[in-house]
Length: 277
Image (cartoon, rainbow, N blue to C red; front, side, top):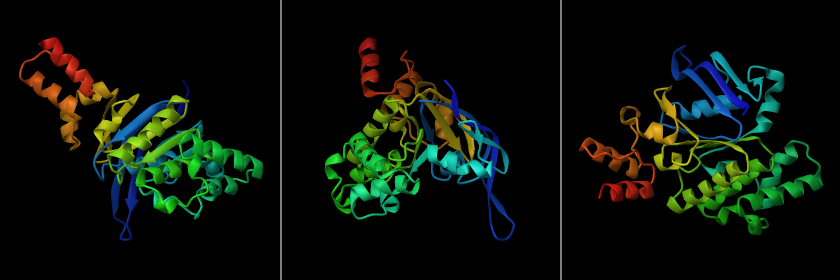
């Protein structure tokens, strides 16, 4: 698989008016492959959102390089090309809505790309179908639930045909039902070949990822498969995160001397307990 996003020794600091700076991220090296489902985990202020803005050139590194589809984000003349391939969905869907009718909202980004009208109509229907919201296309978005609004925000990005979808804490304001709706859409898109980067502090959302990165104080302190990362209890504690319930119980059983494997889901934990019995 080819690399779609590479970061090489990336550092970025936020500058203030009195010449002081605050570290956003430091010593970052990562490699995201085409079609992967990657999760960035970390508490507030750990550097996750800074990293997301570096991925599509909203921010440029002070040191190091960010390569997106073979293009360095420092190549100013090609930044539009990068952003057309990397779509980002933010925490509050209301901040991304620009029209009072859903189909107009979905069409907005594609119109700004200069896409021909008939193609825009086709993309709007396709994008709304992809997130299960086609029946709402003539409605206003402002009467929808939080989960439905976030699905509309995702559709608006999909209509621009990105190759990479980044969700920056996009489930943080949703109730469990809304989070479930959005994650089902995201997993479906990833299953169709789209590269997905999910930024979150909900550990359960990382269970089905291909690769998980844990961030703390601007650095990546661990990465690997979900089972590898959740098995590193020290890194979880250092990052001030809570382990998924199944992983936490499996860890407690291990500490008490029981020979159980690391678990990601309740189903896996139940199998391990049945095996012990």
